[in-house]
Image 1 (tube, rainbow, N blue to C red):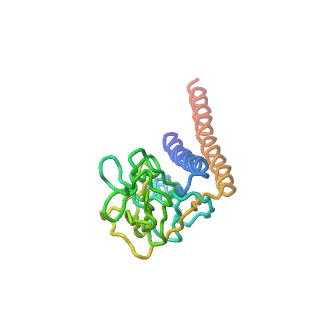
Image 2: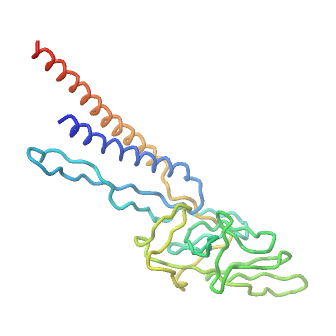
Length: 247
């Protein structure tokens, strides 16, 4: 009976600690551009057995993310780009696979390649976006077209078009690098996605709400831990009674 009591309380404590870890991760990324809040979901499963209908243990359910849009702030930097409402930018990982992100904080490297978070290449419809380092007056249109004025030119030249995708958010999976991938494979560019140059979308984490959740999760962890301690005390008391009965 002790093992059953301890195991039931342990599953609650274990998953409360997991929730606390996710909430801490959300708070740590509250200022990360384009970050999507992690959502922890668990469910109680009744324990099958004789006289066990009143007990249940906790198991993981499908983890998810909050894809609500975050606030957009104007930066004035030409390589800062925010997505309006729905859609994602596409980055290319070192292994050639694509990942999706809402973070549009881009930079140009020493070769003129446009790079996003983690130094990953920003993908265009026809491949990575690359421009001349001496190019001036870089313009990113609402439909993702990237134009720049080359030295000696009076008119801007089209150097590429951002690959903007619009997968169903509930189908996306968050990978270890923070990017999302679609289990169905590569997404085709979408004509519906619109961007805004000179602006950045902030994280959609509500700091106040996350702090409240952290307090609740700490209390839940303490409650389950106290149940384990009560089980230990009960075991000691039962052992003392059994010792007295043998005298």
